[in-house]
Length: 130
Image 1 (tube, rainbow, N blue to C red):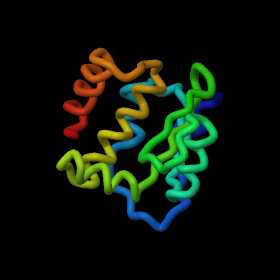
Image 2: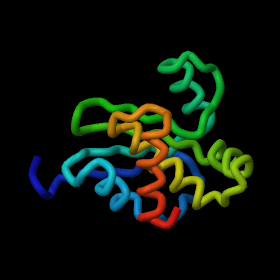
Image 3: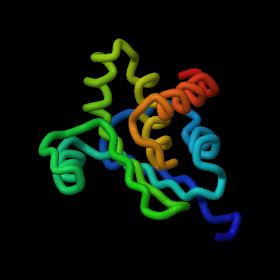
Image 4: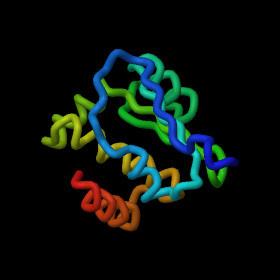
């Protein structure tokens, strides 16, 4: 990989307004500068289709993470579900979007839900004010 190739891309396939967060800096902090990450913002139907196909859960979700290799992964985020979930956790949309993004990055790093993952996420949330 040459240094001119991007290691972070974000594609918004929806009309949703995305929060202004330091996504690339968060990615670099959690996964490293050489990790290639694609973030795709998708609608409810698309995230439900992915959730059904890969997790056998036939309902929309807010985020899905897919580690494709040691140095490459994808994150899919649905803004509609993110807004709904933010309310459940008494967070605003921007804050919860950042929380989810760090959560997805931590999964790509190889962690599963549990206290270790939570403490790693907390460290990065603190670093980025989320």
